[in-house]
Length: 342
Image (cartoon, rainbow, N blue to C red; front, side, top):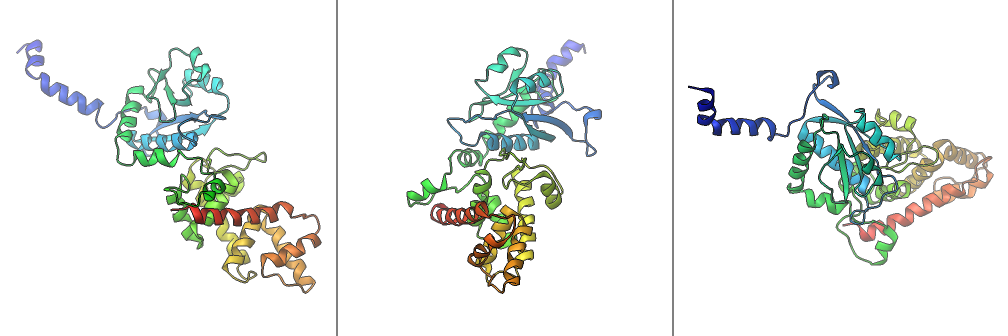
């Protein structure tokens, strides 16, 4: 049998094998020297959406982060995700082969200077994923994984969670319940159980700190949903990965656990203990301990937050204005979340 006859005879089988190998499951090019110890492909990704607000989704960075994680699971790929404010610089880095994927606003003018880069499917928030033509993450494979996610049962839920603006006070003014109180209701409920909190109180603290934005960063360098410094995040979760909403919340909750243990013998009840913890989370546990010690030294009551507020002016180098406002605002936010949360 000639080679041509062989191809003709087994054409259908050859096509089936090719589809299995290159389409299902999604395939990525593997390179041993770029693999981690578990043998999974590693990819370096940058979300360059600083200052970008989609008309469709209020939380583009969070949405793209979750889509990246889901795509990575389908591609059996271990991804490292970071942020950048310099879109031109990250496109230069991608073009040089030192990155595998960059996420940009679709209308980003910087992309016009890199005609050889490939754009994947446009996302629900009009952002675009950009890769190299022959990179380790191919446009075809990414498009296949994204299509799979879009046709999954929970895709509608993903889009809906990242769409609202979630402003709690304006929502509470309507007097009605909403389907979602945050993009991370499930995580908040899980983590709140670890400290015995109503999850709506934890949601209030997260809103106060980051407005539910995983990309939030303070001038002092605090990052993540609960705005922890890197040293605190590592100490209370063993990881500095604060874009990951679950890791970010876990580090914060672990720190809150410590604060609860520290003040549980001082507070009159659980409600007052929560206020002590909120104050310590804002000012640092040392400041609140100073207030308690000052009250003890003067024979003053100190088992409620109102007691401690009366002592704050007596504590040297601690004005406490910001901390008192923080506790009061979190209390107000909690009342709002009780109205709107499903």
